[in-house]
Image (tube, rainbow, N blue to C red):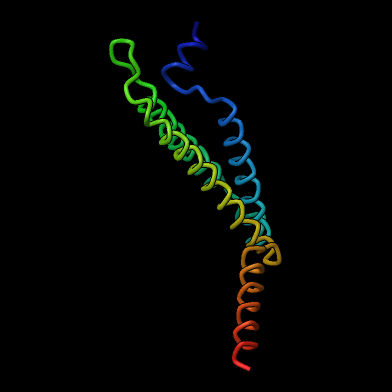
Length: 136
């Protein structure tokens, strides 16, 4: 039926899709919160929502094209099954983009949450301490 047709020709990994939607929702929420906290409630406009809708269209197109590229058939024979790794890379890319955006929003909301910079500065200070100890 229609579900089989959709999964065959449009997109089939609904489990991944759910994870992507969750990441996008968290990005939207943290983005709105960031603007609200830093610029005030009046600066929260429909532009962010429009950007999210635009992102949905872009991501959807990207996912469909990737699905077609990996799964197309010629004479009922798989075209390029060896391109399956491209699908994995594409899926990971979109999730990482969303996670990075959420992380950036969280840092603006509360700079103390910048655990990467905190870890980086601790590692740097350890190396400086070790180098200082070696020179003594």
